[in-house]
Image 1 (tube, rainbow, N blue to C red):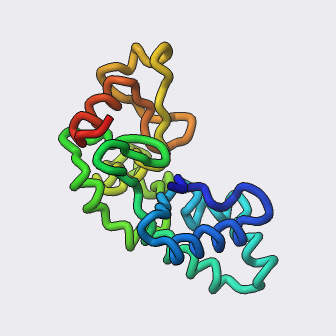
Image 2 (image 1 turned 90 degrees about the vertical axis):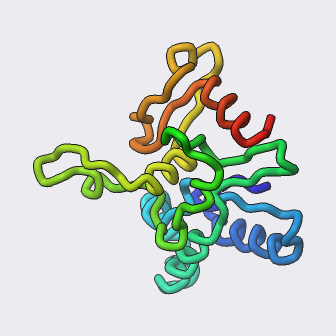
Length: 184
């Protein structure tokens, strides 16, 4: 399982991504790719992958094709109904299940986080994000806290202010989510 952030980790993001996709084609049943928060058109522009593609190929068309491919990468992997693997976090929406995660319309989501303009109304008040975007942010932008640091979060989560998306969550939420899935 390759758990996201395939690019933006140096000057060879194109090559790393190419090798991972080749492995996926060669071994489709054993190689698993999960989408991370850097498999995002906006993040790639901010952290250098766009520049890398432009330097190597001189056309935005390649970058746009990679962005389309990002929308096909699964958000999580469950191995043998025992291990749940995701890039960052678990859904914070009450009652969310793995079926809700599977129902996220990834094909239209080249970005993994709402911009400030998307979530504020004209008066600057926060407006509700669609639940699918909120779950996507939770899965790709959240951070767990260590058990010794998470006592205050044991029964709930709070917004991930550091990243601007997703949540910070404690051990109890993880246990409950894994129990719901039948995983360990």
